[in-house]
Structures are given as structure tokens and as C-alpha cells.
Length: 558
Image 1 (cartoon, rainbow, N blue to C red):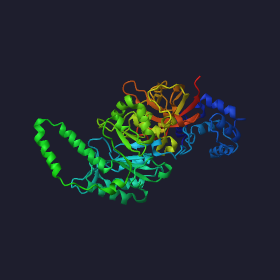
Image 2 (cartoon, one colour):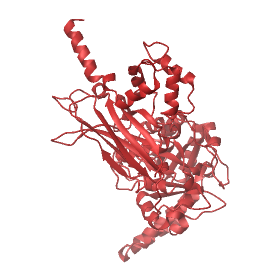
Image 3 (cartoon, one colour):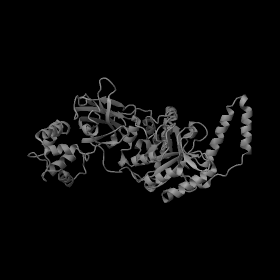
Image 4 (cartoon, rainbow, N blue to C red):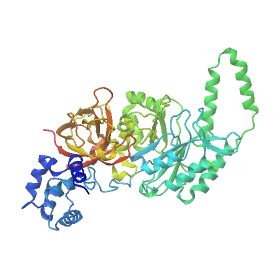
């Protein structure tokens, strides 16, 4: 290597790779506090991890393994640069790393569930292709509820999956089922629920039942003829696939009711047409229902006749699933908040996007979670900010796709009222020290053609209305390795439902600021201390190198 090339390489390293000279003052002070003669030995590192990082379960042997894993170092300790590098490593996660640690022996209704909407669509809701690929991607990410709209094919002899009444190109039910079976448990052993929006005739229901039974085999959970009085526990449902839909009888009655409703709306000019429709319906040969199809349904869905009171009625003898659109939930929450919470303590509530979201966008999930809704159904193929919240919620509990609902939503003695404002429970202090990795993960002219980028960070809370807040750091100009050293403080009334939002942008004076990374973390699982926080792209995929060094501290309100 020539002297000139070496100089360029050396300058490159100093400019774009984090060095100990850029370590925050807090890091330097901590090293001095827990080290001797310029080295932090296993005892000192162990003391730091327990006292400052609040890692109470850590042993001296664990500390020694960290030292042993550091390259080109003496076995008796870390120097300051190695200590800094450990803090900035992927092993120093901001989240509790205990795997699945919630109680998984409670009924299925006691959990928030990572839920997809129209899981087969590759893009928008109107004319995108239907495929098993988005289903596979969702399962790999940890989604546990897959929705399939099933329709007769054009020849009426097979079952297709598509978004009815649109130009979406279909995919066969068999292909979707095969992919679900193959990928159901790659990210989690806990059950996958298939919600079927059924538009089939009884003969095709029987065919669909055979497909489901033969394709899924032993992993299909078949409950038998009786409806559950209480849902089974997650632990007993491991490695099983569950079917949820309206039983055939309920679907037929609902369709007839819809026909009657449409007929009643016809004016006098349409009376003759309505009469002919009724005659045709009267003379049409009645088809037998498919009992084998009904036997597959473990979670019975349906909306009872009547108003909200009837829909939310709790039957002590059986449990069921109710579906509401985001707008229906918002309206119901205004008048029936406590009733919804009571319903969701035993029964399942699925919330889905309103029909005008043809671009496959999503809605704020917080109102649904605040009322105990288990299945907050989201379009997983997009990259909107609400989907980031969904990803954040299900980073919890080992990313298994199930998060135990807070105790206040499960208390049957005192039903939680979502409308009541609560007092502060905790204060979260967040310090954003610095960041690195953009030089390696982005094209060097991605942000600015002729100068290094000007980064700033937005940090805030997504949660109940009283906890919502967004703050912004200063702009650090012309640096691939920005250092902010700013602290932010958040007063939380419901930390159990709070999510910490972190976004980095590059300031642009002449146009919209450029996106430079984001993540969302469940506050209830954030670890105290100084942590390395990896950032994601807009779709929620982790960058290879981009991360922030941050500090988290929880204190009690005064």
C-alpha cells in the first residue's frame, strides 16, 4: 500500500468509524469509576452491569465472557475503547433479552396478537396481485393471525383467495395453505390463527374443509362440535393452526338478512324486480350445509342481531369473536368503553381498517389496545408510521407474536374505564448520545451531493392521549458520526401501553427532510442504562450498521 493510500485509509477510518475520542463524557466517567490502572477487569465490569445497567442476574463469569470475546485484548480486562465498543455492540440490546417471559398459560383472550389484514395482497387493496409471498413474509416477521378471503373461482369448482369486488388477481387457497404450513412456526412456536372471510357455497365449503384438513394435517387444531366456554391457553396450543370464521349457518342467515335489507330499500319502481328475486330464491333448491367445514372452526365469529349492547353481550356459556371496523370501534368507544373492555376479557375482538384505505395504509392501534382488542388487524405490506407502532408492540415478549395484556384490562372485579385519566406512574429519561453507520449503509451522496449529512433525532411516546409526546434534538451539521448529547423526559400514566418512538432525519433546507432510520420500542421492556439501539428502514428491516448510543433511566414521580 502506498503512503498516500494509507493516509486516505487512515483519514477515512478516523472520520467515519467511531473512535474513543468521540465517546460521551458519561462513558468516560463510568470507565474511570469501574476500572483500575486503565483496565476494567471482570469484577469491575460485573459491578458496572449490576449497579448501573441494572442487570441483576449477570455473574462475574458473564462479565469475563464479554472480556474474552473482545478481540486483540489482554484477558484481564477492557481498556476504554473496548468498553466503549461493548456499549455500542449488538449484544448490548435496549430490550429485555429473556425470550418469551410472559405467562403463556392464560386463555387466548388474555393476549394482544400480531394480526394481519388481507394477508395475501402484495400492494394496494384494489388491483394488486394476490400471492402467498406476503403471507410468508408476515409469518417470518412474527405475525400470528393470517386473513384469507375465500371465493369460488370463475368455474365455481375451486377455491380462490382474493379481495372480492376488486381487480386483484387471485391465488389458490391450496397454495396459501401450503405456505402457511411451511412457514407457520419459523419465528415462533405459538399458534397461528387463520381468519377466513367466507364467500363460498356449501359444496365449496366442503372442498375447502378437505383442503384444510389434508394440507395442515396434525398441526390443525380441531375443537370438536362444542363451542368453548373459555379459550384454551397458548401453552396448550403451541405448534397448532387454528381456524376462525363464521359458522356456515350464521353466514347463510347473514346473507339472507342482507338480501332482505337490500330488498326493503328498493323503491316502488323496483318492486317487480324484488318479487322476481324472491320467487327465484323460493324455487332455488336448498343446498346442504357442510358439517365437516363447521367442525374445523375453533374461534366462532359473527355479529349478533341488534345494536352494540347485543354485540358486546358476554355469554358465560361460550366465547366468540366479534369484528369491528376502526370507525365502528371509535364510535363504540365513545358510549360503551367499559363494556368493550369487559367483552374482551373473555371474548376476542378483531378491529380492521376502514374500507377507504385502498392504499393499504393503517390506523392508530392505541384505541383498540386500550379497550383490550386482541386482533388489531394491519396491512403488513406498507411502511406507514402506524405499522412501526405495531412492530414496536410485538418486539416484546421475545417477539413471539403474543403480548400479555396489562392486568388492569383483565381485572374482572373492577372493569377498567378507558375514559378516566390516570396519575403518573413513572418518568422515563432518554439521553441520545450519538450515532454511526450511515456511511456504510447509504450511498455517500444519498443525503447531500457535496457535503456530509446534517442529522437530527425525534424521540417521543406513542400511547394513551395523556402520554403522547414528540420532541426533537438539535441538528448536527456535516457529520457522518453525529453527537447530540441531549436528554429528554417523558411522564407516563400508562407505561404498560407506551411505545418509545425514535426517528432520525437529515435536515434539508430546500425540500422535505430525508428519512435516515427509525425504531419503536415497548417501554415496559426497555432496559435501564446505556444501550446500543439499532435502527430500521421504513419497512421495519434492520440496517446493517446504523445505530444510536442512548441512555434510559426510569424514576418515580415526586
